[in-house]
Length: 134
Image (tube, rainbow, N blue to C red):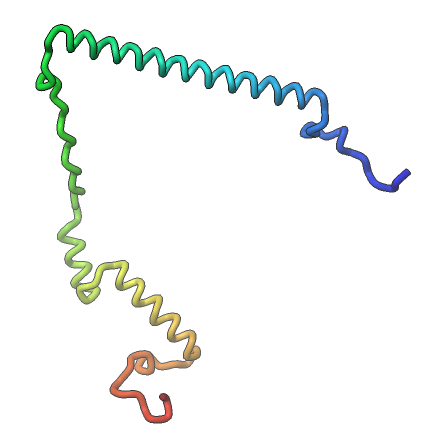
């Protein structure tokens, strides 16, 4: 005895189990059959379209009879709260909400980087950097 557990034959996903091998073969055969049916259907549809085109040409219909509808322009979103959005942007200093939040996150990161006791004045650069900072 080798001292190892031999539990693979008991597993339902055992790839060497004859039942699983047969199931894989059966599934692959079914998939091949479905694919063959789809290809046959595509060939049939193409043949029907060719016959229609030949009949159209034989009757003398012109190509101008076939009018293709132009795609509709993309709808613009309805802004139900446009007035409130403008008021909120004005309250945020003319910035969008995303820009304001991004600025807040940047300031918070800078505050954490400088230390928990940093004054808000220290976050904003004021004038040229001193000679010892360069």
